[in-house]
Amino acid sequence: MIGWTILLTAALTGLFCAVFAVVIDAVTDALSMATVIGLAFLSGFCGSLFAQLVLRRT
Image 1 (cartoon, helix red, strand yellow):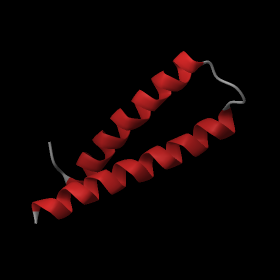
Image 2 (image 1 turned 60 degrees about the vertical axis):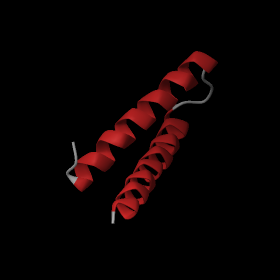
Image 3 (image 1 turned 90 degrees about the horizontal axis):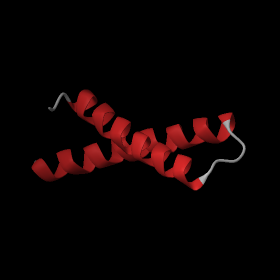
């Protein structure tokens, strides 16, 4: 059962990051590499928090 939890967390994080990327793409035209790296970190961090919140894990 633990395997499904890991896959579900990864899928939810991926979904969050995909939606986040669409929003960022819609809001900005061109970003510096440092900004892209920062946004990628923020997306992964928030996506992980989102997945844990949905699954009620801490």
